[in-house]
Image (tube, rainbow, N blue to C red):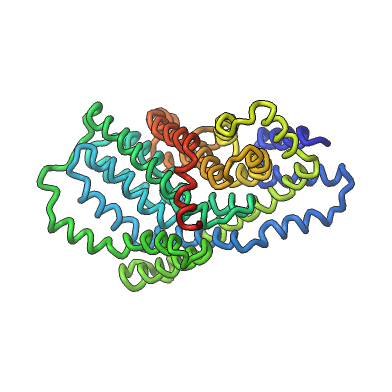
Length: 427
């Protein structure tokens, strides 16, 4: 059983609708059995894959995201942004993007953004005159900021697999996250004029109202400031950032906003355990599959194939972009990172691509994949949250691929966007 056969077998299992974690396990296990490798390797590999200190941040961030969704933070962030920007034409659409940026500095996941802010944002936009599809498409597009801007669960997992500093990766996502925010708001500004997006009445903006909303939202707004500031100053590691987020969310929910009950806490804990189990099972299953590919030297073969195309790092990155955009349409984000990182990092570092830069490019590609069928989880999530049929959501979201692809192109062609800030703080 050769490398190409292992990959083909995995694709066949996925085509037969076998769950991803099971498909990875079966493909890797089949190779181990047929190659006569001791079966004890399976337990060893699966155990070692999740026995990682950097990965400890993943379940804690999952818990933090679920906790903050029930602690009153999301509504206060949105109310403040609404008063700040709501009086402009298309103001609520801009608010949607700004709120996603702020919340992404807390949750670190696109689906957490949609789940936490989606219902609030869509309901407010519908009440102001936006169609459900317009509100849903903007919400889903802005949620792509979450896994780019720190903290980011996909970047932490990439760093663990690529053996790259998770802190450098998180810091590297700051400028690309802001770039996506600006380009999305520029697109919304154009659509506000073209489609006559609604605006609140002129008297909606008052300094007194803004001041009150700011005071109510201040503890929530301080969360990303504390977390990002702690990372930039070197006080927190990614795991420590996640832990601080949990404690801060508990303090806000229980003692400041007083919206977190014991029953809600138990519910949040159970949901976090369920999500963590799913993620960790995928990670451990992917380790078996990755082992099979490593034994067959697939990463060496891929590196050779890529170098035959070109030795120019920009050209190879563009080729990888196409590959990742295709993979993102058929494979879940974490699984794609676990499978492709061991293959792509050695090949591209040989031609001088910085693994930090590659990590940002890879995650941004896969975030766009969350908006593309058939495996676009953000599409399914926003369809459920908005109550709009999936086909209508897909049609409405198509124009917002333009700023996302533009962001991807700029980040790919200008490595300094990803590498300058980590280099500044880690000289």
